[in-house]
Image (cartoon, rainbow over all chains, first blue to last red; front, top):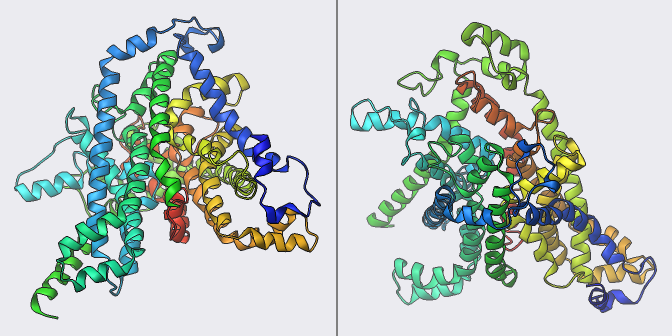
Length: 308
Length: 295
């Protein structure tokens, strides 16, 4: 690392050496690197230890003296229905939410292709959801989906009979408000990304297609969508990673209740570590998740450098 | 324009209006609820716009006397987490978010400069920081709790600031990197021909050119810090409290439903973030994609 970095000096900057300490460039990255060490790298090493112990803070033994149980944590995880379900549920949420966000964003962006008065104002209002604190967005949806909230009121008005369904305590339906909150908040980001991409499209190809008499639908699928592919892939990648971590709306709306039926991976791990205090067991789950996430991301993150 | 084109335009504009309505409605409900008096919080049918607007909910958020008065009049007692005022939460959030933003941007600028101009650590080095943003924070939270308990950093300003700095560094490094890359290094070279040191050339030539970008990065990171919830939830135990934590406390108050109060707290806590968000609207895309997509 050290030798290569010195060779990397740009030739134009190489001659005047005044004020340049040796290894100065290394010193510059140190503050950032040390912060990362303290908060990310050292804890990751601690996970490796915790994952093979059965440490629980309630045992009153410090974590470094915990009893090793070796690989039993992983064995238990494999047969822990709640964990397996949480993984499946998280993947389901990622798939459905990100797909919905992309579909809605594409549709929305197409409405904003031409210039019209108030267009900027409309964009500003549509992106409002992504501006607010996620916890507050969840708070708003908590009230919307209340038994006596406006959603139930609207349904009652439509069906013409009183409708007092308690969304958040139904094992099957409690996931719906959580996912809606997520889609509501992050479709605007997807919309902004797609719109940016559409505005930057080379107009010549689109115009050529129009002159050649292609239908708007064909132009969209055969010309615009392929040109948008890099932007869309970045948007999908970033939203999938972020949705995979989903925690705030779940915590505010249900905390994984009823009976663990809305637990995502993050919620499962929070409940395990800070409600049941099974730190060692959850460290094993964390290790598993970290290994999978990082290896998937390292493969997928390549397009990000290419595009810029 | 013929008839069918007019219809298409009309249809498109109505779709825009419906989208605007959907985007705004939950926020409207939050604000509307924050002005409702106690007996309208959970009435059926729900009240869409109250006829008796009141500031009581905001008073309960900010003045402990109002909270005590409310508790005595309506419900007997409020639990200890919500009976105090939310001033402390705003104050703590402001301190921690500002400090963490400062450190993140300063460390990030130095590191980004080093990476762009010296290619420090090679081409893959910046990815090390990006990986941090990819891992679910809950996965590192368990060992951080273990580490902080040994270092006595749990429930301190320093501990939370450290965590926030580390988890926003990927954003500051990647965003500022993308800004520095837009400035040709020849400009610094020219200043150095006039006898300036390398780092001074960066500070006096390049930094002023990207100061708008750095400032947007700072606001963007402040938004992230102010909105953070998971770390605040796990790494504190009552001594330090953030606005997001206070919102969660109102939502889960054991003394009963506090819809009006939680709506008031939600509205006030999100205002600064909305303001900053619109100020840096132009740079939001760049920020949220780590500089991959520029305007």
